[in-house]
Length: 102
Image (tube, rainbow, N blue to C red; front, side):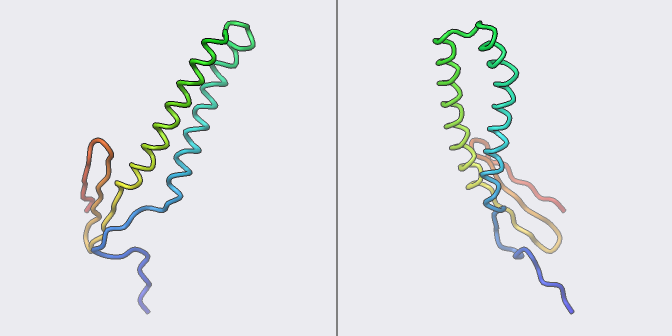
């Protein structure tokens, strides 16, 4: 008995949509780690004034908005195509890349 195919052949398909929240959660974990190692010690030692704290927070909000937008655009640009002897892929927001894996 033939095994059923999990991926369509010769038809472009996208990875799971779970890629987006996974990527965003990893981003927030990395930011939390950086804040824990830099801003929290400054805050506890009294070396962080109000203006610097607001500037750091505003910068983080801006970077977060750009990152979340970029993540969605990157996911929308990802395509894979499975053939009998190769896998073709293309992706990229600013720089489009394509590849073939035999």
